[in-house]
Each structure stands twice: as C-alpha cells, then as structure tokens.
Image 1 (cartoon, rainbow, N blue to C red):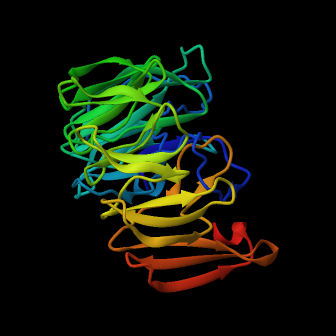
Image 2: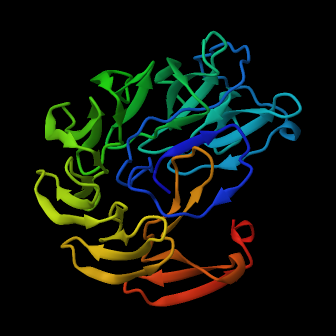
Amino acid sequence: MLGRKFIVLSVMASLALSGCSKNESVPDTVNTTDNMSVESKKIETELNKKPNTEVAPESDESPTVKTDSKLVQYTVANGEYSEVCGFKNSEGKIILKAEYDFCGDFHDGMAYLLKKNLKSDSDGGYYIGYVNNSGELVIPVNIEADYGWMLDARDFSEGVVAILNKDQWGYMDKEGNTVIPFKYESASDFSNALATVSKDYKYGAIDHSGKTAIDFKYNHLGEFKDGLANFTPTDSEKNGFINSKGKEIIAPIWDQAMDFSEGLAAVAKGDYDAKWGFVDTSGKVVIEPQYDHAFLEPGGDSSDVIGGYFENGTMVVYQDGEDGQIAAITIDKNGKELKRKNYANYSDLL
C-alpha cells in the first residue's frame, strides 16, 4: 500500500469496496495528509531504552522476517490476547528485547517502536521511537502523542520521518534531531524531495529545510510521485495535478484521483457511481474510465486503502456484478486483462 503503516487495534466488523470521495481522507489521494489516530487500552508500561541481548525461549516466540535490515522481528506472548515485539539478529540473538506493543518494518534503515502510555488522558496515548538496523535505539521511545482509535505510525523516507508530537506534526532525522518544527496540522512522508503539509486548513509543500516550496492554497494536495501531485483548488471540487514547482500540468477535471505510480495515475468520473481509468504524466488518458473500483477501501473510519497503484507493471481493478458479485481483474499498464477471478461477494474477495 501507501507506504504508510496504520495500526488498528479494534477489529473491524466488515470491509467495503467504494470509490474515494473527493472529500474523504485517503493516503496518497487528494486528502493524503489528514491526521490519523489509534485506539488503545491503558496498560502500565516502563520505557527500556537499552538493547537487550539475552536469548528468550524459542517456544514462546513467533519470528517474522522483515525487509531492509539483517534484523528479524519476533514476538512473545504478553497475556492471553496480546503480545509484545522486539528484534533479533540473523543468528537468533536478541538485539532489542520484546517489550514493545508495535514494531514497524525497516525503511530507510529505521523502524518505529510503540509503547502504550498509561499516563495519557486520552484512550489512544502512545510513546513512539525508532531503532536503526544495527539495533541501536537512536530515537528513544518517549515521544508522547495522544491519538484516537488509529495511529498513523510513519516510516522514514529521504532521511527523515514525520512525527505527531502532541497534536502537531514535524520531522526528525535519524539522530533524533527535530529538523522541521512541530507546527503542522498534517504532514506526508517526503517524496521527490518535497512533503505535503497543511496549516489553517490549507495544503502546500515544503522542502527538506522546512522552506515553503508550494504555497498553502489548496483544499487538498497529494504526495509528489513521478514529479506530480494531485490537487483540489479552492474554487472547485475537481482534481488535477501540479509539478514540484506548483505549475498545473493536468487540469482539474477529474472527480477523484490517486497519486502516480509507475507513470500512471488512477482517475475517475463520478462519485459513488464512479468509473475509473488511468492517465499518464501528460494527462493523456491511457486506459479509459471503465472500472467500478480502483482500490479496496476498509470500512469504519480507516483512512487507508488497499491497492490503487501499479506494482511491477500490473495492478488489480474491480467490476461489480449481479447480486453482489464482484470480479478482481489484473491488468497491465496498457489496460490488457491478464487475469480475472470472480467472487460471490465482497467478503469472499477480502
């Protein structure tokens, strides 16, 4: 997905397929940077900032191999219905003891760690920190933020990470230095040397120094991918695309839009009855709007989406059938159908 890691502690009753409304918050779409939060229970924790190298009993662990590091995440039972996580090296030696409620994958040589904060006044209090791929806790797990029922735990990108500190977003480097102050209402990951941020309910973009690169004048602004970001102007609800200089490259004529991936972006005409197609970076329609869904959208208040982007030249789109049936269709970047699988309903698909 979006490169983003969303941790949801409550079990969703159902997942639904739907088009992305122009006013909804969807990562890497027109509203990619809206604030997120995480449901939690208040559990007493102690912060342990030092790596622990003792080996735990194998029978109590459930190892999971992660990417971008020689370290392996492992988990240990922590009561009947919960577990804690840490990291081992490739030889099975514990480098970071399993005592964290959530451990992220390694990206840009760093992985997030989360611990529940009992002292928080909200139901979603967490401490967040980061470990490098050598097992050093370079950003101690003591950055305090209050969340709701879902947490947007960010990965490092281009050497920095967006962090929500209390109720404002800023950026820290791999040494734990605050390189861009905590002053934004929302903030995206850096991509193409720019990050989309918002203040006073308007979106713009900043560079790595924190300097405003694109003025705060948009109702929504996506992340820069393939040099372009989708936008919604203040005087329209349509979506178009601008380049990293703020120049309009694709006019705002689409009702919905995803960010670019591998040279193409999913765009749609219509809202709940949308038909999705694809344009290239010049705005040329490469695949005519014809699909009912370009991605899966979880139910509830989740702001994440499943799919919506090309990976290795292919992606899956969806067509509704009769009596709730749905077809998952794998296409290439020319719109050629490579594979189709029919499902009796959404639940079977998911």
